[in-house]
Length: 99
Image 1 (tube, one colour):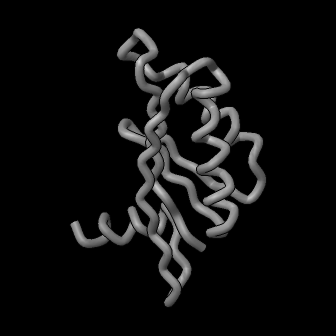
Image 2 (image 1 turned 45 degrees about the vertical axis):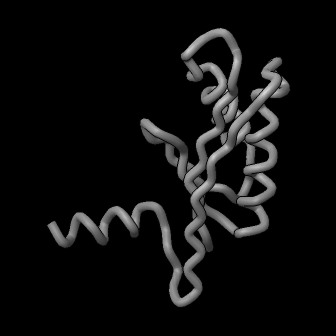
């Protein structure tokens, strides 16, 4: 299991707001089987099989184009740990346990 933090940002839309694009991306995530996700203030964390994550990232990158954007910047950070299973909740709990 792997996870990625992704930020998809349309450029040159005439508005500094991107929330409508984020909402459209989350509609795609809600319809994607095998992917767990969590919205954050600065991006979205997705969790699942590595191939499924890459496929999902490609689909999310296309969302602003489908909405009329002419340029899209997508930033991805990937965490692929192979010595044990990781999860969004597990990583947060690990830090909270140390507080």
